[in-house]
Image (cartoon, rainbow, N blue to C red):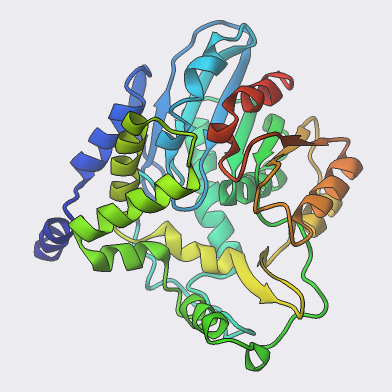
Length: 353
C-alpha cells in the first residue's frame, strides 16, 4: 500500500484520475462498468441497445493505448441504421482494466536476440481468454470485432481460438502477418550501437511505459503529450489533444502488467537491408491453416502506414485472398487511421454490416 502511494505521488496519477480522463473522452456513452474475469476485471464502455436486429460492434485498442482512443468513432457508427450497439473495452493489463502482476510469470529460455516474461501461448491466452469471459458476460454472440495494431493480432488469435463468435473481423493496421525473413542477422552481426541498445532493452523487457514512469509526473506527461502530438499531427484539435494526452499519460504510468507481453508476442528482426518487428507466431501461418467459419475478414492500412512494409501488407493480402476477405488502403492516413481518416474508416466498417 505504501509503495503504491509513493508511486502515485511520484507519477501524479491514480485509478480515479485514469477513469476521470477516460470519461472526459467518452462522456456521451451510456454505461461504464468493470466486468470481473478469473484473471482480473476488464474495463469497458457500452452504448446500450439502440435498435434491435442490427449489428453489434466491439472495438479493441492496440499496445500502449486504451478504449478512449476510439472516442471520435462511436457517434458516427451509432448514427448508422446498420448498427445497434457499440462496445469498447481495455485488454487485461492495459488501459483502465485490472493489471495483475506478471513479473513472476514463467520465462521462456533465451532465444536469439530476445527473452520474455511469458511464453507466446501464455501471452496470447492472457489477453484473449479474459476477453472471452468479457464477451460472455456481455451476452454477445455473432458480433463485429474491430481491432487496432497489436490488438488486431490478439483479435485474430481470438477468432482462431473461438471460431464462430464473429460475423466480421476487421483488423486496422494490424501487426504480425508475415513470416520471418530467412536472412535475419544474429546479435553479434548487428552493426550499430543503436541496434544493439534496442536489442538489449528488448531482451530485458524494458518497455516504453517504464521509461515514462522513470521521468516522474511533470516530465513524463510533457513527453507523452509531445509524442502524441507528433504521431497524430493534423488529426486532433488542441482541445482533443489536451484530453487525449491526459488520458494517455495516466494509462501509460499505471502499474506495469500487460505491457510485458509484447516481448513474448513480437520480436525485432534485422536483415542486411531492413529492420522490422515480427510476430513470434505469424498470422500468415496461423490463419491459412486455421478456420474462421462464417466470419468475414477485412484488413485496413493507411496509405502512409508504417505497418505496411516488411511484407506485412503482402502477407495480409495473401491471407485475405485465401479466406475470401479483403484489404483496403485508406487515403491520407497513417497507423492511427481511425483518427487520421475516420470518415473512410467508418465507411469500411459499415460496409461489412
